[in-house]
Image (cartoon, rainbow, N blue to C red; front, side, top):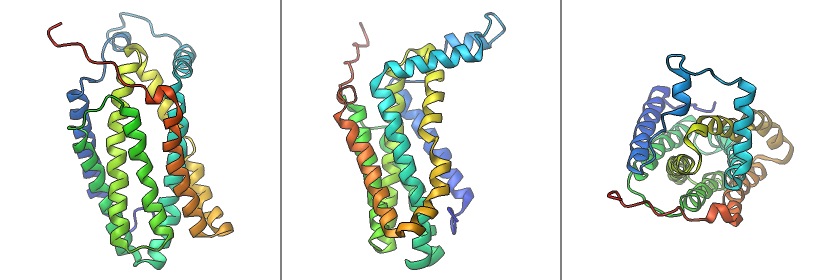
Length: 255
């Protein structure tokens, strides 16, 4: 039901374009994926790989060392948990009460367009505080949830969904740029793999429990709590000093 009335092929095309433009944006920000230490270990057998447990421990130590990183992981996990409600309870409310499967298909298509738009916007944006901008954008995800709870018109919900996914595409690029600037190149893959695992760990539980919670307290209350969770998990991170810290100025190209 998550993609009811929505073309899977069109969604995959939108995602492919989103990742293409996000890679372009990383290059424009001077944060192309690092090559070196870890690739050398994998190529030609010139160096023995460390045991998996050793690599895992090194990545975990690096995650714990950066407060801005692990606090954002908690925020991302809570944000994703709230977004699970959008794809389950939100979809159910739209299909049953706000226009049926066609309305949900329009909303989902708007989200795909928004994701691509966010990646394109990331090509142009320049900011000295990328995590502040990223988390303020992520907070916009609460709008679609709140509008469904209020039974707004499907067109208004579609616009809010496009805004949510556009903010997500932009924020993902700013996050990736920040990680590649602040984490040592030889540890990026270990840290990033742990980050992606931890930030999405609650998604299956969120998908499974959303319906049960809605049945217990009502869809409107569930959507409202999810909207608060999305906004609070994003804006609350602005209280962390290392999240608000500006990026160091880049050295002149001729230096």
